[in-house]
Length: 195
Length: 195
DNA sequence: GATATATCTGAACGGCGTTCACAGATTGCA
DNA sequence: TGCAATCTGTGAACGCCGTTCAGATATATC
Image (cartoon, rainbow over all chains, first blue to last red; front, side, top):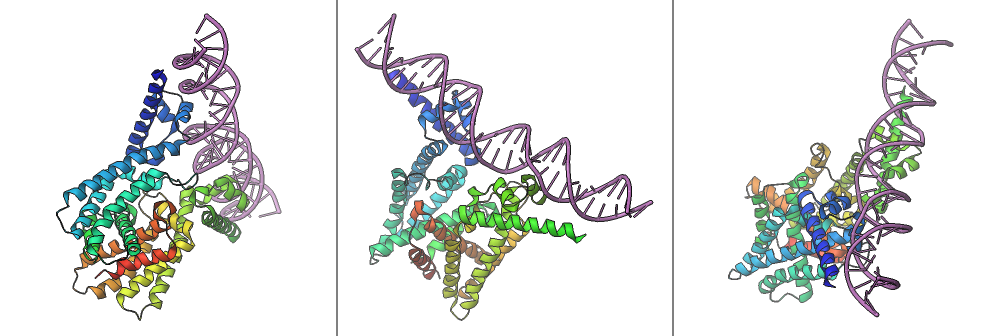
């Protein structure tokens, strides 16, 4: 009785693994149902017994990526806990940059996938994002102890978006692509002048 | 002899107009060669006598959008010339936000189109971007007269990217979508604390 | 072992960007 | 004006895509 469930789970996992590897190598646009089927040794139709469509499969990959991203930033926070709050902000931003630079296509997939069409945003997505925001909010609270909660919340989002923008455009050759050390410097320029 | 050139130019223009309208209404993904041909009253194949592919057509639309974006930001700079440099930075950032919010799909197309594959980035693209950077660099130079040129250049890019990130994620419902007034406030929060 | 249920199969469907052999119009030249 | 050369428009056809579905197959239940 466990036989079928095992095979089910194994195929499901293999498909996610393959999709992850493919996105890592060639980006979202290189993901093809027929390639996945060939790689997993199944028919194309079988994919749709496990996922509603390829977008759902991409979301699974994004879930993994988001988890690793959270771990990377969280690790930086832990390592920097002795530093003053501003330095902690910079440390986690640099961790964000490093993660994005090292796994560019997987990281890009987090934001490129279209998900607003079907149902609402998945829970894990909002939770993962909330986790990142929490990392940012903590040092900010120390830096601005008198700031109202609403404003601090806004500032959290603003700083995340700023760093995200610097990383996004900095890694994009066509916009203002620059060496990673300069991206690091840009993050420092902005964050050091805050507060 | 001008007859054929007229028709050529007219069809070319009509195709760009149609593509612009379609992107404005449904985004890049809704652009379809057969719809364009039907709208322009020509055969699908005729499109490819005027553009290498649909991507080249999109780039034409982006050229227009970039021009209008430059005008919008430039207008804000002109109107704020009496203000102190920091307020000018905020004024042009708000103009950037307003433009992006009012013409969201056209603005998104500027960054969504894939152009790194074929040849190098078009000239007008780099020039338009350079124009935007110049608007930012001027107030910064006043604010930091002793800053080395290289660092000022980096700071220009950093601030542009920051504002871009705040606008990008602020307008995106799934990430941290918020009302436009709050996006405005976020821009102020970051820029007011600079320098 | 027989029946019911769930899964897998892969050809087929509709839609896409792009191509190409052909038809038609326009131009340059005698 | 007539004729050939050249360029432009035509739309069916090509190859690829995600997705579907009737039929084949394997598993679970009794």
